Image 1 (cartoon, rainbow over the protein chains, first blue to last red):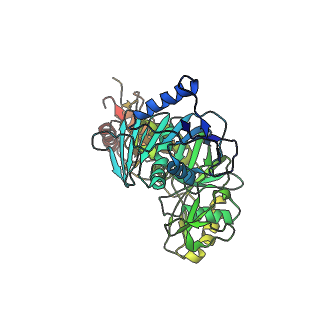
Image 2 (image 1 turned 120 degrees about the vertical axis):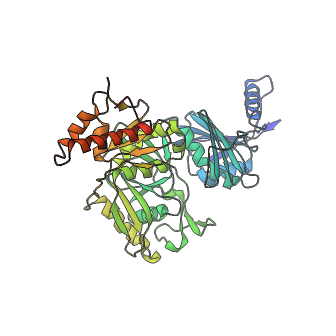
Image 3 (image 1 turned 90 degrees about the horizontal axis):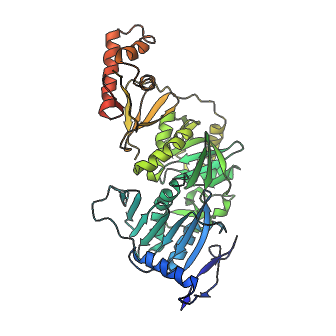
Length: 372
Length: 89
């Protein structure tokens, strides 16, 4: 029997950063055979015996994450999203296994049903189904993703964020739906829903000489009052009509956007010095307003996909509060597309050298906000 | 008899003078204004409504004491309904 295995090499550059080395499996009496049988037995519990087509360990937030794919299509799906992450030789602390067969889901109504996702929590295990057909089950150390049929890329894109957020939160690494841009003194986290302009601000930052850690997904670690951020490098998708000059786009992504190579992203950790919530303004000159601390905290909580799971919300809460104690801004992009990058660059510089005062937050009644 | 105190599972952080609290179920975030935060920080079981209102009275000497007590009692009832505090008041 021949088992195809992608053997990891440090800093590899072929395809997804790995080399192909088909190797002959050991006999059934050998140690390799025993390991293989155990793995297949455990996978079969998930709904089918999925072989391992590719396997490598990458670093996400200082945690070794084993990425395993059951076939070539799933391998390519992982590469499409995470191909910029170099392979490391450190042992994995958590694993994400992309199977052909979808993990089973609880036979009851979901706890949450929003934005195309159905989500269940059973004790500390997350179950997830997305409208692409992608499904996942995630415990404290392993995420199993499957389903999606021929749409392996879309299913992985849709499920990976929630899976890795749940996995890393158990290691006190907090994955946020946010960008991060870094100047001389540290990084600003950039919050906003999809389409709010995180990528636009990231592109403006790049063209103004800032470092960009990510436009869409970051990971935090906290030590006391210090919070640091690193990006999870994925292709940067920006509206095609922004016409970036310094970083020419490479290919269209099918959403009226063009993608920039993740090579334009910085891969180091940076201390977080502030937060920016982006949106679209109604005037050509855009706007920059100070954001009250408790508003900044709510924005930070909403960017954390595991807010729906109370134990992980409680785990993230001190880090979110530490973020909210830093300068926070609401940045509204200019309404004129042709000048939007220049406006964003100017507002970003203004945020770094603030002259505005915080708004008066005096009130009389307690207010409630659901975190999600 | 001990006064009202914060529930053990009511996790909170102070951000720029505002207490922000996760409720006991972990499904709701409650934000208090600066006065509410002042009261919240004293909910250690050692203060009754009268002493809490007295502390506010030092800041609002033009507000009748009875009105301050009523306001504090209403505020505590709101916290109690949200299971953020325990104890009688």
